[in-house]
Length: 285
Image (cartoon, rainbow, N blue to C red):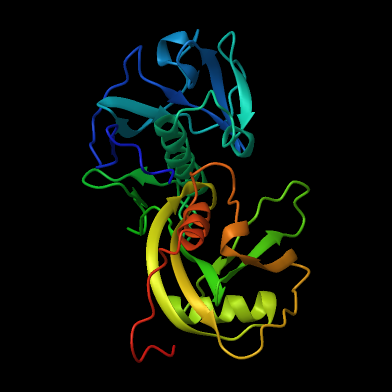
């Protein structure tokens, strides 16, 4: 998955006072696009020393011991030879190394959080960086703001030797996917699984069991994968606002998404190979 970058290591422990160097990657975003240049080592973020005038910046994390920094606002001048690339397109780009892609996704999440919380949501005063932890603090009312993470589920719905494969609505080149959705306030993850499957496909499920988790910075979410079994009818009633397709696919016919970055892809391949977690006794959630 995207976070499986060993022997590389991303260290996101908060460290105040880290100074920028000329060889520090400087992450610049425009929506869901990131500023990169093509090098002999693939697509990489520009370095601080490549800017004619160093823009305002903020320390984000270390990747393999190198500090990465983010630019909090849109740039008016770009280093020569750089251009913006779509994060979605980069997912399948052979020039993009996994550790760089994971760094970019993490940087996007942090940079967007800093941008969206420049002002206090309680009293509208400008916020200031926390001194002891990664936070933003309102000097007027004392409100402390932490990075925002949204829990969401990815669901492998099983019927015998078949897995429910979906495609999202509104995406011209939608890849094969699984049922997914965000957890609501006051809801357990298991309840999210049952609700999302019912809302999107009209299916009832049982035997919900946890598989694995994954950070996914594009939507500020922490994905948690579950498998479950159909309980009752297997007839699909599609929510066409969410999905344009949902079909039962036999193990041997599952192809996945073409690249092993996502939890969704791994769950598809795990089921294809018959390695999904078994049903525990007396599990009927």
